[in-house]
Image (cartoon, rainbow, N blue to C red; front, side, top):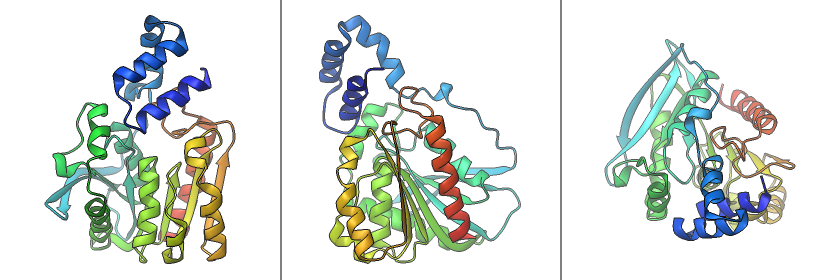
Length: 283
């Protein structure tokens, strides 16, 4: 698919562009409204198209924990009949706790961890089925309260009797940006893995006490502009970090429900590296 179309979709999903404006611009790029409509399913998430993984040995449940202004909803997954598990907070993209991130939470648990996928849209009643509505609601979150809800999620994990008290986090896109914010805000965090997320302010890097792993897509110009200053600050402050740029792949390359952006080779390698870090730091 033409990279200009993928870049347009990325702009649409990460800005205030209306769907009407997006479709108008897509029609210009494809040559007609009819072609724009036919291309759209290739761009949008298709949960049925994702790889199916069976999790026969997992316990899963929907839970709530006390947040800043009420209960926070979350999806919990862990290996059955196991104790003293390392804990991983899973942070969704900018549309909420959708089926893909629930699947990712299960995949983390399947690697031997207690995994918690938090729904940041809990203050609005939870993630809506309409992803455009979810994207709109993400922009209405109070940043400080949202950060504190995630910090409370980490505290919840540390206090679970089936956990070992060690915590990490993994986030994608908007969630990747949240990983950086949590690394700055929580000195108890043992490991943070950010996929194509906006970088924290370099001035805040000295506050980071955790091990950081950063996955970036080579074609992701929007996010990658922040890499040089962030990496310089990580080096200057001697932060334990690993940074990987996967060439010729797009933003959201890990999302196997997005066929035009998913890259199996890059996703598999990044996942292996991420789980290796968690096993090293959270065991």
